[in-house]
Image (cartoon, rainbow, N blue to C red; front, side, top):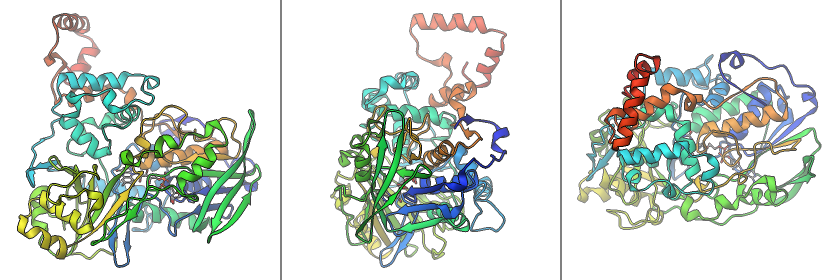
Length: 591
Ligand SMILES: Cc1cc2nc3c(=O)[nH]c(=O)nc-3n(C[C@H](O)[C@H](O)[C@H](O)COP(=O)(O)OP(=O)(O)OC[C@H]3O[C@@H](n4cnc5c(N)ncnc54)[C@H](O)[C@@H]3O)c2cc1C
């Protein structure tokens, strides 16, 4: 496997890998990573579909990418995915997946046309004092000292950030700024999370810094991602005869490991409560989604809280990884990620409005008609003074293909599930759907005496608790995640958010898809480049632009500098006078 960039490799089709007709694949999980691996196996590996087996413990595919209407409970989306135009592996794949909405069109084209015609941007990024615009006004409001802390992190070698927390590298100059409000609510970082991941994120999305305050950097699918991404992939794979096995729990994968060679030899499964095993030869490839951000996630209902269940059990992603990790030091350290659900949980809730009473309060904030079918909030609206640190979003409606035209589906989430609310004086994790809705209504400005009635009769709310949702953000060191294909592995790979691949950032659809692509390309030795992570961090233009944007447009020459630094800057400016460097710095408003 090698990386490439540019369109020469992007448009080429690889030759059929040698010996692929004799090979089979067993894929643990049916999340984005697993489905992508299957898609790359059939498209680029040209493996026969009927040789590919997807083993999924749940009754439906998709893993974290969900969006269903549960009988007698209501619509639920555990999350909504903000996405990027530089999800290189993702778009490499989705150009080949037919849309299920429009005949003859790929999922990529569908998405591209939609976001071209109706670009995303927010008209109110944050509120305060019960629904008033917090007037962050597109500003990061970061001090020069704060900007220097970010710059320092940007240039700190990864090796020095092992096991470090964000609070080890940032102080209140960053943590009290709008920058941090935008950042932590958008990406769900907590102050105690990994400084290394924070750095990787800044580098990965440096080209988007200017688009963060109003979300013009983002793009969204037409419907929830289960319907707009997972279902088309499943249909594509079924068309090739790929075998889906639901309700199959993989308890363990056994390996034969020597210093020279590592081979998966057996998959232990539980099917209908009965133990079984699949024996593997070197021609049977195994792709393992280890760990899992939505493991143990639970839903409540309008009148019931979602249980906070942290017990790790056999047949789940964490226990399976523990059993695998015990067999070889290169298979990672799952407990670095799953040991403290208090630091890795947060909650979301899906609110469905049932009549028109809540709508004016929404309109008042998002300043758009939520029933127009177009962008509504344009990304999350964060409630700056919420004890739960609530954010909420309304994506293009309907979000579900069968959603009634007069209802809105709203996604609400809170980063602090253990803190008492401001109106409902209970922690979010103890609240029913109705109570979470009440807290949200309070923060969007509904009069207090109408809140309970509206939450009860004008909405249906389903809470969702995810104990491990940010497990991948826990402080970590190299070696805690296994490489996608560990050294010496001949017939297996790790997939998803807890497999290690260079430069990309977790908690993204792209990361999962990339691991699927890299795993397949490595194990089948596919002779075509895997698109490298978008190289903006090496692009001087993006770096200059980000530097100025982060400081709300202020030039380098406006920075508060000491006497010595000012002199040095003057010297440098003199030296570059009349050169292309000076021209570039002027073009990007650095000087
Ligand atoms: C709330 C939320 C918000 C998000 N927001 C964004 C966003 O804004 N932008 C973005 O790009 N991404 C976002 N993501 C991330 C993205 O959705 C995920 O990273 C991606 O879907 C994960 O896919 P995966 O295949 O790696 O893992 P998963 O989806 O977790 O799939 C793992 C699968 O393996 C199965 N499995 C696990 N163990 C076993 C076993 N032992 N036996 C059998 N089956 C097993 C699971 O049931 C599951 O189906 C968000 C995710 C969530 C949950």
